[in-house]
Image (cartoon, rainbow, N blue to C red; front, side):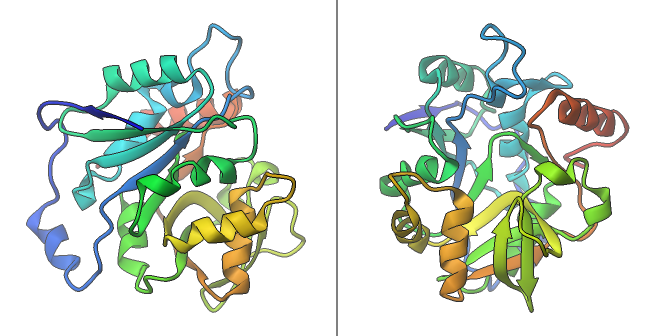
Length: 268
């Protein structure tokens, strides 16, 4: 593991109003960001930007992710890299906002599912942590609501979107079936669902045991781990309400996100 630290803050700390609202909530101070994949559906060719560094209205995707946690005062990120790791780390050094600290974790098996990328971070995190994809844009209201709704230290919490008719590409989305706030099933092809996975979680350390137990032939997805936690009654949902988010996995999704940002501000 290696570290990247910038020199002075570029993102404001949370206001006293936000700090007051968080009293009594067990703080979560670290974010694991998965940035190990190849991103072939978005990249035009091998000379194109690495997916987490892909510019959206002039800013890399992963920087939007980091800045969305400013409302919680979080400036420590554990970033899992893999594909073209040297170029990725160099890009992170160039673009990480000042005052933020990055811990770099390498996933040598980046060609496998995203559950393996999270397992690579097992030794880097010992307490509850946020988990985010590096290619999802979301308003700060989402991690804020997720944090305030995550009361049980032993449970996994997933931010879900129930505005199903507004999902840009529902076929590609990971669907969630829940009952009274608990996850019953999760996957892209499940027949019944009432929400969509936004790619933002709060995870307990128990997620690593769940992923290890869910492996088949040395591979597992995050959804496999969530399903295993759900079987224990330890996987819950937090509704994002009217907040905006968007997965940026294809050129069409990128254009949609850019169009939204042309009208709105992500970090208002």
